[in-house]
Picture: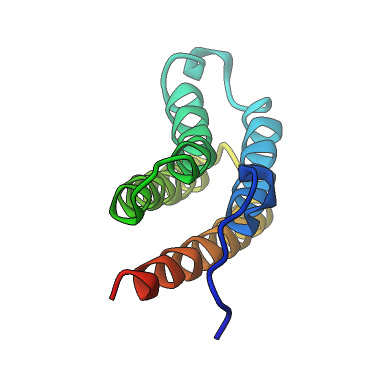
Length: 126
């Protein structure tokens, strides 16, 4: 198992890197959403995606490990929110099945790294 080491910046955190890649893909994908969704699904999906990476970044600078974990948990909640929005976007045919699968894989990768990072932090407070 990988040992948890304190990162110097959030950009060093692999979970943040994966989340950022996901955010960029969400922004690219939502460009094709109908214009009447700009304040609806488009906005909700973008905000939730940005929240993933932002909470990882914010949590990194928290001094206590439990506080870090709280922000990582919020990030995971935002990731789950995105997963629903992607299912909705696919089901109402704003995105293709291929686009959905690509975004799902990216979200799964971010989720895996986020869970690993959280687990490593939890191990340090046992």
